[in-house]
Image: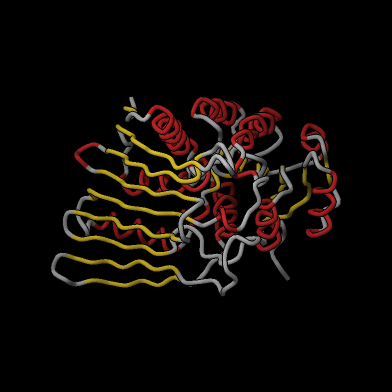
Length: 349
């Protein structure tokens, strides 16, 4: 007999990403998916039928009033994240809010979300699911051990040729729905760079690539982050370039290469070629020419993310991704977009 369901979950938004969260609610034995909310009746029915959820709402206020929820997952378009999260927090009815990335549209919005959650004693966290994988937990151990010395340089790429697979009506091409490569894929890279460096960048410079025949959002971005002490990160985010997930972290005594650091799934709608899920790796190269190779079999990152959230609630512990860290990410994203627009570097206070 399985463990009794402990945490009741409601999901706001019944689109593509919500299905991943729905599957996790079934996979993680500590959770039970009890309600969904979306303004689209068709989306509600489709999601409800797939996950056997009968409590379906087109009104968030109604869902919060009628359901006894512990966790709410916000999986709407990014421009609505702040409004939904604040409504949930101020209801005083939930214990935790998991917001899909990016946590908000601007840093100012994120500040308001943090304040609302803190006022009502709600655990607020952002859905960078890869932070909970064995690969990234091992990377943290490697960096903390001092094996490669002080990290001074980082390169990271996250690209997928979405221009070949998705229609011009996709949300990723619409700024008003939170689209653009910076809000989407660059957010992963900025988060990773700040996590690895362990500090905030003081200067941001970025250039964007546009295709006006498709959309008015940046399709690709090249980003340079300057950190204190001369450290730097060079990041490439794209909807146009070949599929690539790779990072290199260079320290004063060695370096680390990571492949498939962000997502091991081979199939998401029609974005990628159909193939079995792939293992991710970490390779460590030291100055004495010793090294190590770690291989990590595919894991369900959504499951690990939800499981960690449940553990935080059970133990009263902080999440690996506190909202203050997410606020730092939004400050950098704001600066990246400003730099692309003005063509000038942006200094962060």
